[in-house]
Length: 362
Image (cartoon, rainbow, N blue to C red; front, side, top):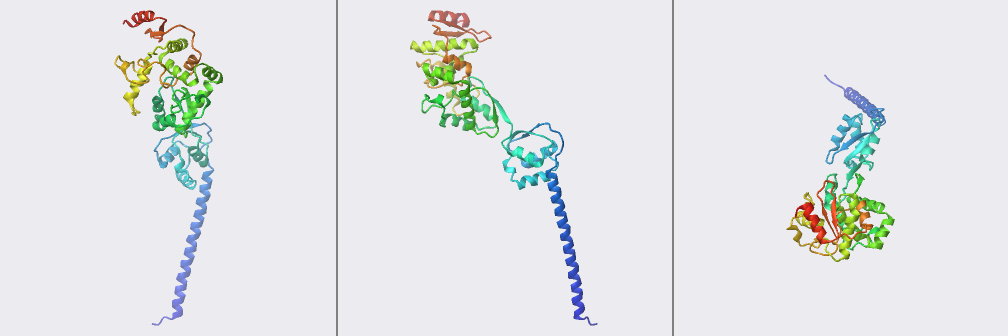
């Protein structure tokens, strides 16, 4: 049986035509689906999971993956669709910009608003309390517990060139320890360690105001005043005794007597014991008789005059006491052992020895 060439051509044409129709049909389906997905995507971008306007803290842990963060946002009803959220984050290159910390979110936020919140500097401040009388290392430890680098903080305190008027009489190679004002700080989560130091120095300038600074300059200079204030901070418990304790230090300096204050020995001992170990926590234990012989320029039992620098970061009350001490003839004081932390003061060694025997039994 013969098949004509024209018959084969017609059959092939029919197959090609059907394939072309199928292709365009599928293409139309794809286009329609793409348009539908696009419409749905942009519709979802503008949607809000809820009308609730309450701000709710949302925590992002350091090292948490973006997928985990997305799932948490969905579980807490901050987003409606995890796929849309991830796709939008990819479009905006938002994933690498997410910051650890706590941010306040609302359930009536759009996808873009949520992404902006978790990638911008509007993260909640971290509240950090710096206690009066802490050493630099103790401050570094509490900052490390809140996510900052302790070593970077210490380096910024010791090595950076801080330009503040109240530091003008600070020795060139001295750190700004002593000027890290103790307070409760709300620190932005994106702050660097240097910015935290700057924040504390700014707070010092505000609290130890111009009038106090000028009085300190006129008396002993600001740096020496801060050194005395750090000694007062470590010795005093009762607020009304701070000016008296400051007067003892100044009276002994004037009389060319060694200060013989235990906190300087504690500072020297703990500095030697801790070294560069920032996990060390055994600060400020009472010194032993052996500790009094530690060979250190900070040991005021072995050396006359002030220690080379502040041994702690004093609060405003101690700074005021060191700037404006009480007018006394006291040269000695000893703890009474009372719960209120009071001291007995004396002008002569005989009186002091009597107080030591009375309150310490030796």
